[in-house]
Length: 155
Image 1 (cartoon, helix red, strand yellow):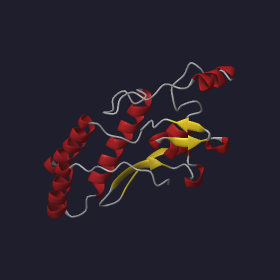
Image 2 (cartoon, one colour):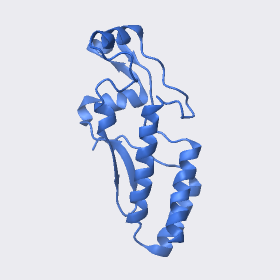
Image 3 (cartoon, rainbow, N blue to C red):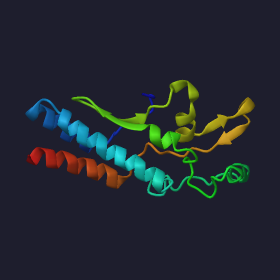
């Protein structure tokens, strides 16, 4: 798995998980549910092209990119989904103490990271790729994860 992941830094969630672990021990079932919630969130980020994120909708494609995609019959279309390789590489995973969503694309390609964070790419690093964060959560997503924890506690 590519080491690009969503990390929830919300102290409320961390506190809740700590309390749950103290009371129940093995949190594997809960971590599975949380990873699935985050996975669904990332899928929504692709479908809305970042429109649901605090950072806002992803920057539009450059005209040369649109022209190139049009030549192969892939424009109009969704940003970061010309061949669905990146979207298809997103996978949830979990352990007894962690819930993770990341890309399974090989680390050396840099494809997943360049689109998440932006930067220079292409021959001679002459092309600037804007950041289009897809591994991201909004406030509603954080509340969904808190709901996952609450539901787990009620079982």
